[in-house]
Amino acid sequence: MLTEVADGVWVRQSEWVWTNSIAVRGEDGLILIDPGITGAELDQLADDVAGLGIPVVAGFSTHPHWDHLLWHPRFGDVPRYALPANAHLAGQARQRAQAMAAESASGVPLELVALVTPLPADGGPVPGEIIEHQAHAIGHAAILLTDRGVLLAGDMLSDVLIPLFDPRQDDQLSAYETALDRLDEAARHVDVVVPGHGAVAEGPEVAARLAADHAYIDALRRGREPVDARLGPHAEWLDGPHRSNLECALGR
Image (cartoon, rainbow, N blue to C red; front, side, top):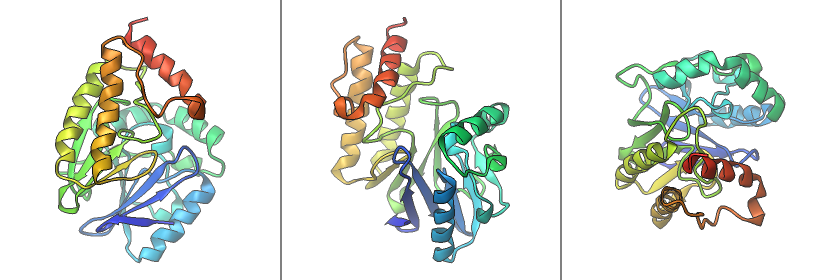
């Protein structure tokens, strides 16, 4: 079910990697951000959205990974926006995104995957301030809703995922350092952070999330093995990505 985490900001979590679908009330209606994941969950999300009694006027994708490029017919034939770099890459890699969605999430309307268009320079119907960076993915966006004290962080600041590098880009260490500095500044204005995956952070947990990602990146920068509570026997599925991060950071 959708849970209101701040005024006009609702979150519904998927069982698939604790993925968060977000609904934000704008001036003219709802903006759905990264809705997912399975067909059944999208059906349930559509029920929840209908229950709010607010029309969906747009969608928004925070970055060009398949699990953030999904949609459902019941959300309506409305514009689905992304930052220009995201929209360009999503268009180029649409078939791959469809194939990954078909493999990982049953019942997803594949014909609606990755149909995003560049966000207008004025932000269109998407409220708040867009924070663009290149950590984790090309054209990654966070959304700062200062008036509601909320930061929508995309695939950053998770309590279950370590920072994950983008193999298509060079120098992800620097990209992450830049991104975390920008998110650090934005977080000074909020009490709630909604990550793309994991639990919503509130109060002191916001600073703890930033500190954890900073510490992980700092350790890699120094050529050391990070000490991170998100790693360990309870999360063996992160071993591969973590080793990949180490190899990337050490230039192997």
